[in-house]
Length: 91
Image (cartoon, rainbow, N blue to C red; front, side):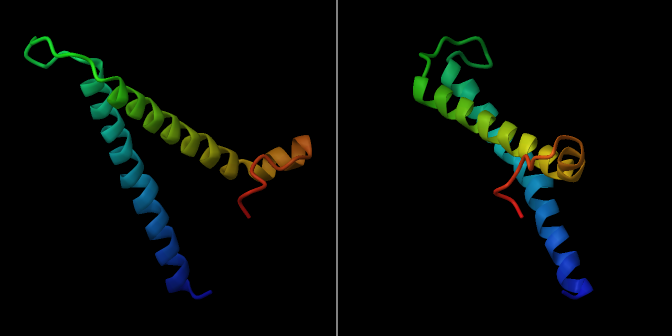
C-alpha cells in the first residue's frame, strides 16, 4: 500500500465517522422530536410512534458504532490483559 492509498483510506473513514455519524445522529434527533408530538411554538400535534421508533433505532445505531469503535481502538490492550478479541468480526 502506498502512502497515498493510506492517506485516502484515513480521509474516507474520517469523513464518514467525523461528519457522517453526527449527521445521522441529527436525523435521529429530528425523527424522535417529530415523533414525540408537540411543536416548537407550543402547538399540540399528535405523536407519531413510527418516527419516535425510527429516532430510537438511529440512536441505537450511533451508540453501537461508537462502542465498536472504542473496542476496536483498544483491541490490543483488551487482548493483552483479558485474552479475548472484543471485535472478532473486524480484522
